[in-house]
Every structure is written in C-alpha cells, then in structure tokens.
Image (cartoon, rainbow, N blue to C red; front, side, top):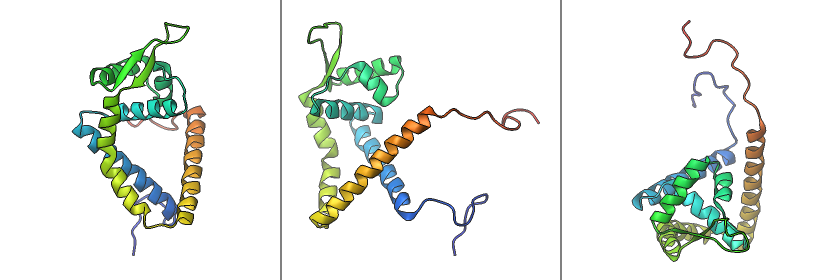
Length: 176
C-alpha cells in the first residue's frame, strides 16, 4: 500500500522513467558538489569550466558575456566567477584578434588535470555500468538522452519566457 502526501491526487506524479531521470540529475549534482567541494570549487565554477570546454571543442570564442548568458549570472557574479577561476589557475584571460578590447577565456592545463582527477571516479563507474549494455542498447539510450536534453532545453526556454501570474488571495506573510 502506498500513501500519497496530503493534497496530491493518488495517481499523479511523473512516470517511473521521468522519476529516474530526476534521480539521476540529483545524484549527478551531488557528485559535482562533492567532487568540487574537495577541490574548493563550487558547482558554478565547474559549470563555467564545462561551458568553456564545450565552446572550445566547437572552436568558438568564450567571453565573459558568453558565461554570463549561459550560466544566467549577473555581470558582477560573472566577474567574481572569472576571478575565482583565474586565481585558482584554471582560466586565463587573453586578448586576441582584431578587437583587443574583447577578453577571451581559456582553460589552463591545470584545469584539464584537475577536472580529469575530479571526474575520473565518475567516468570509471559509468564506463563499468555502460559495459553491461550492447552497442544497440547504448545507441537507443544515446538517442533517448539526446531527446531528453533537447526537451529540457526547450522547456527551460519556455519557462524563461513565461510571466509569473500575480498571487490570488492574501500574501502568505500578510497579516490575516
């Protein structure tokens, strides 16, 4: 017998596969927090390095504005983030090309070494888990995860465009 929390219909809730995706996301975040914490790096620092790595792999220039936009940070928060990454030896600021005013961000060899060390246990465990599947099964899983990422990006874009409806009734902190 299952007991649903009060106020929740008996049959509501995401399908089991969606619950597994939510659990995977939560566990991945916990891993990042744990690995980053052991190296005095916050999740935002690691996300910034991931953004820089992705753009670099596509031969795209990474600027502070790119980080600000992709990580949804304010300009002061972006500056503080870049300062942390620079001071830790993970990022260098460079001025290249025709517009010498534009600051470009590049990961250092130290960032690649530290990142590899932080994520090596996760990679090892994931490789062992993936070895239990056939190439055909992994192809289906890859297509599925690609679709889930695309759906999540689309939902995030839609959510960002929605306006918050005004509250209907007394404000929770207002005296009654």
